[in-house]
Length: 303
Image 1 (cartoon, rainbow, N blue to C red):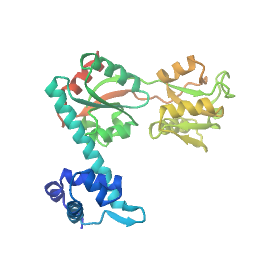
Image 2: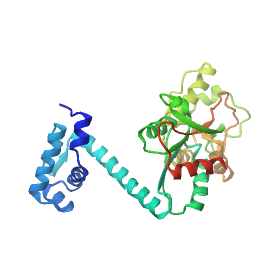
Image 3: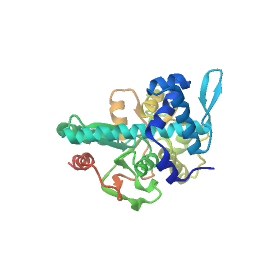
């Protein structure tokens, strides 16, 4: 039987989660006990207490030693998140005590990343010892991280969240998109190719946001979605693929594409998207108090 939240909050201990992580790393009770500085019987007893609390076995024995089962891997994933959060708590406490401002976690989509980095650079001018975490993801992924408290603010589109009204928003950041390709692609240099010609190509798509933009373009042209596409969730991966393969197309934010095109690594295809790309907004949760570092970041973003 799955324990209640109250049971988990009252019975789980950080030292137990630390033991689980050591067991996963070491693969044996003996080595894990040494790593967390307790006796082997103590480690065996602690593992039994955790499994009793959760109502399930987390590890199985194999020829390679102890191995986490499916439920164990789930618990380990959250144990690592909790460990990371505690580390950020310590960093923020130290920062506040030392006057450096603590920890700041910000997120942005691929197209918004340059604006995020510019604001972070201004923050660091006044707080050089601030602990920073910058996350690149889709708007949908960033809003999920914002809801979970994993990041403080996000530069993305609020309409990808379950309830856009849950967020404060500040400013708008336009993101024109270019159709780009390898300089050797047959459509590069062609004057105003039709979307029908573009539709027949292989497209690199960024998860969630880019497929939707393309889908709207295909619908407006009365064409089915492309048969072939390559999904890549890394800006670097998209650029590397474009430079390597002269048969694919991609949509990239103008600020990223322009610099690469100026260096001759990629080229713009002479096509203007008919679909309007909504602007980004700087978002944070309405129901949470912002840290001093997050407030400073918002101020620097607006400067």
